[in-house]
Structures are given as C-alpha cells and as structure tokens.
Image 1 (tube, rainbow, N blue to C red):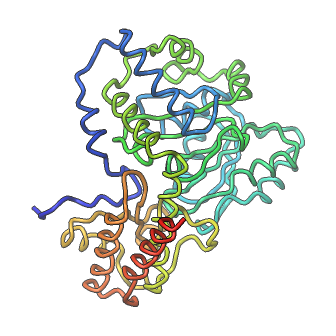
Image 2 (cartoon, rainbow, N blue to C red):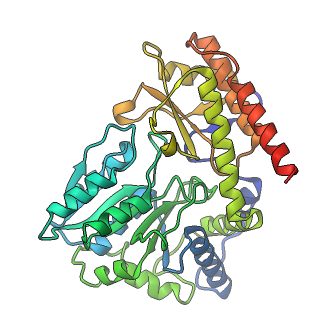
Image 3 (spheres, rainbow, N blue to C red):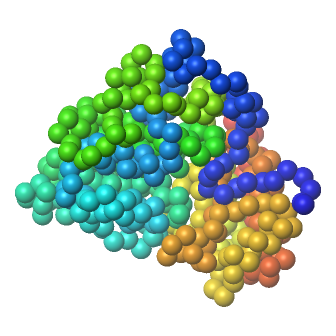
Length: 393
C-alpha cells in the first residue's frame, strides 16, 4: 500500500473536505421533521446562489446522467427533435441518452478540440423553419476534453435565429468552479451534480429550471414518475420530497454550500482560475500540447494534455499512481489513449497543485516521455507572483 495521502486529481469525483466528510456522518433524522425541512430549504436556497438564479432548483438522488434524463422527460415529448453539440465524450453521450428515451437527436459534429459552435447552431436553427427542434443541448464545460463553451454566444445564436427551442446546459464540471449564470445567460434547464465543484461524493443530480421550461413541462407527455418536476416542487415548498431523500448527502451539501459562502463565490472562481493558469503554464513549459486548441476555451476546472505520439497514456497514469499515489484522469471515447487529464477543482489549493504537477513531471521523466524540464518551476513562479500582486493590492 503506498504511503501518504492519495492525491485524487481526476476531473471528478474530487477531494472531499474534512468538514463535509464529518457532515456526511451526521445521524439520520426523520425526513418529514421540521429539522429536515430546514435542511432541504438551506440546500435549495444555497444552490440558487451557486447557479446565480431565483428560478426553482431541484435535487435528485441520482447521478448527473439522471439529471440529464430529468431535463429531457420533463420538457419534451416522445419523437421530438433535439440538437446537441459534440464537444467531447459527454456532449455526444447526452445525445445518446436522448435517443435512448425516444427523442430524435441530431449531433452537430465536432473535432473534440473546440467548444460549441454558435454559428453552426444558428445555421441549423435558421433552417428549421417548422421549429421541429425543441431543445438545444450544450455542455458548458466538457469534462473529457477540458473545453469550456461560450454559453452567452450560444444563447445569442439561438436568439438571432429567432428560434423558440429550449436551451439546456450541462454545468456539472463548471458549477462552483467556473463562472456560470443560469438566468442572465438565458438558460432554460441547467444540469448539475454533486461530485465536482460542490466537493461531495457522487449521488446528487440537480436541475435549475426557467419559467419557460416549467411551461413546457405542463404539456410534456413523457411517462415519468421519479423525475416529475411538478410533484417535487410542490413538496419542496414545505421542505420535503415525495420520496425518501438522500439525507446524509443533504447534510454534506449544506456544509459544502456553507464553505463556498464563507470563501465567497467570486473568490472561489478566482481561485480556480489562478490554479488553472498555473497548470497551463506548467504544460507550456513542458512543451506539451493542450487538447483545447483555442486558449480562450481552456477550462478552469480541468486541463486535458495530449500525449506525445507513441507513448502510452494508460502506462503513464499507472506509473504515477503506483510511484506517487496520484490519480490522473484518462482519455475517454475518441481520445482514449491520446491524453491525460488533471482535475483542479473543488477543495484544492496551491500546495496540492504543486504536488500534483511534481508527480506529473517526475512521472514523465520515469516513463521516458519527451518534455522540457521546468513545468513545476513555471507554475510555482506564477503562483508566488500572483500572491505577491494580491498582497500589494
């Protein structure tokens, strides 16, 4: 067994703070009690702050995939068309979920190196004169490729096409990590989950829903029971759920929301941006290639790094896991074997990043992966200088 604490630097699940771990161990209470109602309301109110909205937020005991399905079955009808963007594995996978439940999903093809293309979305919607496309599905931050799409530009493209489709956005790997504005950006359904920026285990799926989405839900004919928004929202007004909720996870969520509130959301986002920039400087110093070709689209929660030709991504990750007790993210789908991913979100700080980058640099040397030395130094120099600048105002 390796010594020392395991460094979990995959792009989620992320490290769970001790405060949250302790909260997860709180004794279970009656989920119909006044204490439970206070717990639920604290979680729902806190999530509205993180999504930057006053729209209703719903919590499911589910994965993010369940929250994807909830977004679709509450607003659409069997046979409806949806338009999805192939920004990576999960953009394509959301389209697959849509197909599997009986929707007609059209995928705007992508090269997995760029974000959603607003011009392509506008062109497709403009051609849809009968308004058969009922929803546009976009990942704000594509976990598999480390690419962040410009959601305001996507909303602008939809508005320029004068198309009434709903805008559904997955912000699972950007929630509480990268600036996200559900209401201001005109998003109809936001899909989040617990295991990344919210610093919790997997197990909670989240929907934030606009008035337009709620109106669409009134005419949805999809068979549904567990996912039904209307019943959950009715129960939530009193602080309860129509089913037995994951009470322990709600205790953890209340604590993670308290931690985010204490740090301040703007400070949380600035911390993620700073650590991401340090990571990018290390990658540049190493002379390696980003999966995201456009610098403006490089994620503040995940960095995906392409492996030099002829070198094994799986072998490299196995080496750093065995030698340094460090877990890095694998390449998925079309980029399997072609890249590795560093997650730098959630409960994460300068020294944790320094250790992660040191493990990567030492691992590349041991694995014989061609690179230049000095990536860790470049990251540390940036981190130190940015602290000095902040201290001097």
